[in-house]
Image (tube, rainbow, N blue to C red; front, side):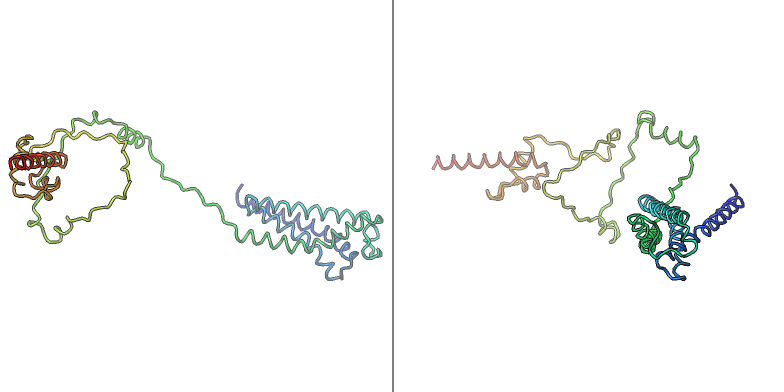
Length: 292
């Protein structure tokens, strides 16, 4: 429906509601007069009842969720109350001529008490429910519109899927990039030399590194430039070097860390060399003591 049609529909609705309010206004004014209201209060009484119905209708269109259901309940309750008072105005002819006794809306006392309670409590309810509805409308947060992402063409989706699903074998033989020798610290500028020194990150005690489920990428053969130029030494050669390096060491200085630094080997081999050298020294000390 275009804007003109919507405007025409709203105008027709306002006209119908205005005429209905005029009809109801006469009945509610007479009921208010019968319950003891002065002429000014009786004239404003219809605005209290039917006006809150209009407010609840607007709140229903704005609110959502539980607040919207509350507005619908208020609208239904005041619509029913206005209907009952209009019905009483129709079945009690004395209300039209203003000759009925004050506080008398029905001949049966229980019905009269209920009708008087209903007519007198509607203004108080309008204050409470009207304030609550206005507060809910003012604090209402509209729902944000969903984020619209740019549409992708079928060719882009297909190309992305092909690239993701392509295995390493389809990409050809992997060739390791040449590893350039690292320049000495003295050859670098002062700022670059300082940036190479990084503080060692401390790992909390008991922390376990997470095992990665990502497959390792094939790197091919290690280039000759990256290989160590020092030939591998046998256990006997390491033992000879360790004996020579620790010949003048005291027994308390014969540690695995010291041996590792002296002969430049792994910690495991350094521990084996330490145990061997200590055993040799103990054996030599025992032989010397026996000879003495």
